[in-house]
Image (cartoon, rainbow, N blue to C red; front, side, top):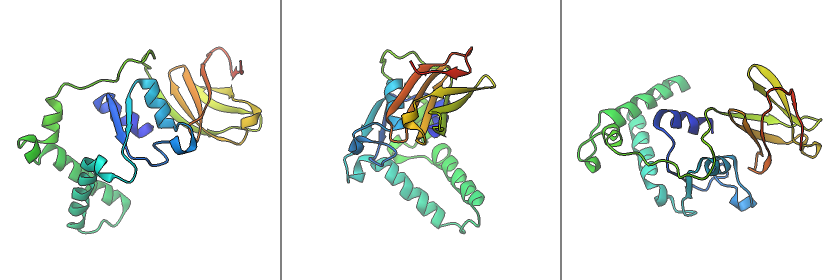
Length: 201
């Protein structure tokens, strides 16, 4: 989710998002929701999945990967991850900001994107949050997880039945949701800044 919010901070929230059916993108086979599905629903973003075993649905990004791989293969192999990242960054800058595309009437992707009116998330009744964070934790023996808010550590009860369970905390200012690693919502609350311990109920 942190990568998603980093992109959203640069380009705005999208109206919809298309992904494949990897376990990180959908918990439907496990009869639940994963963290990204729950978050997009809360944001009013339409979430679309490609048809299983049909990579053509995500053909544009698959074609981009092919172009990137060809570019990297034509260069001297990077001797470190930092050098590889530098090669990728250079290619992305060239691809988006310098190289004209036939499918875009010889414009760059940056020019085409900048010239369009942006679609926005659909309204779903949730107030827009002002601040987003994602925190990974494990429920302690007492059935709580911790969260730092305004420089003070807060303890959030999620129940002793969940002790030892890995969780994801989605934080939007004082609105906090605690999800299991599989995407099950364990608790949603509005943080009370006057209390160190956020009790159940």
